[in-house]
Length: 107
Image 1 (spheres, rainbow, N blue to C red):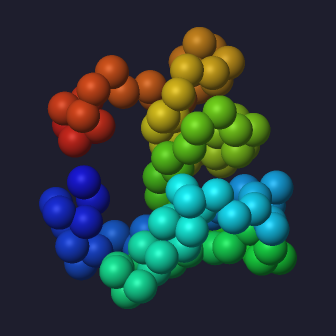
Image 2 (image 1 turned 30 degrees about the vertical axis):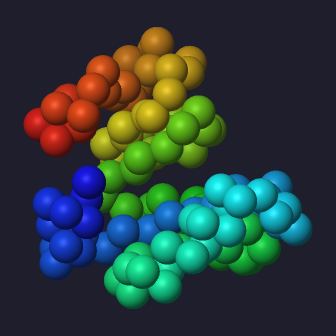
């Protein structure tokens, strides 16, 4: 959706794969890694990377995440958060949980 709307012209889009995915060979993970070949401007951080998620967070203007403690860290740093699944931070109103695609694009 972001690729279609913006073509990465004004967005630096980073995807941080969870470190626990190291060594897994699931089809979904292989497809995700192969997105880098399709979208050259996609910044994919592999699971085995030593790049700090917190360092990335502090330089971000928006965080999109599933259930993650980074959600509440982002709120602490006044960075807007969109969660892609219901979790405690959405219940506490610290982050936003879109109900559908229109909610995401209008945010």
